[in-house]
Image (cartoon, rainbow, N blue to C red):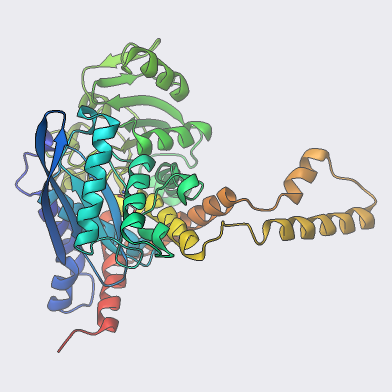
Length: 475
Ligand code: GLU
């Protein structure tokens, strides 16, 4: 999908560099610092053999560490036939800026294995994954203080548990071994709320954007999520959860797109029914009451208020951007818009909420997971009961003073002390709200001359730049 759409003159990494350059002139750093921020520090390309059935397959894989201004480096591992060095470099660079924007104290990295995961049995995938993990260990490209991978397109908690197990068995006795990777199953040191974190972060981010009356007026929308017509492209972990939180909070999902095509209904699609339908028929097409769309692209061009591309890069480009009707494009995926698309949409007055902010919920909760692993204690374990006892005594005092009793439902809500998932959600919500306003301030400071992506880049460059200055450069 990524390859097909990419007809522009820039590679993905060059596109990221171009966006960086657009923003860097609004910052105060000398050329050398900017050049260092932009560069990919370490690129590890590997090939290794794995026996698949009767044959030996030589697998091509990568890990790129874009920036070491803060350690460890952080970023997912993707399994896709589109993986190549340029793609992994671009994605690693985006991780640096993403972490800076949401104040996650990590450098950016990304990994990729060039395989179609659907072609392999789970046993074969485990062999490939474990071999990849041991290559990373051999070259010191993984570790709680070095580089901490996570899920990305085509990978999930299962792959993460294979990696942590490989790492721990090669590093016996390493007390923080669990912190070598995030996105693990909860039973293997994962944190509650990580699976849905990126989708939930997208929801929080867009909720913040549509909450500002002044900005909504400019694009002809009312405030609030309720009643907004949303199209989501990609029903993987990110797209599914984004759609779920939009729907659960009153938005109308009018379109859904996958690689087999798309479906559209002005009246709204029930996400849960669509997922059931896809499970039973193998496709989202022919969903009762919806119109079939020949392609994912066509679906994205349908009428809506908010479009969330949540699959791969370059899907909105010079050839289709002019037909996009959404007033807001929220980048759930990394790099779904090419620089050409950015220009076209900006001329049309579309508000583009950029990837490096909007999909940062995943890495934010990964940061919480890493902290949990290093502290060896579940969030809420020390204070949940304490909060409940405090709440009980406050409530008793108030009831005693007023002579009134709250209802049972109110009592339950008032007494509830935070579970891990409550703390994770609230940390994520706070992060997405604060970061939105930080970017918006920068955007307003640039007098609306630039798009929100450029403003986000300036915020990121300022933070990474200061870090490099303070680190000192070897004489
Ligand atoms: N792969 C996700 C991303 O692109 C998450 C990275 C992480 O959690 O480290 O942001």
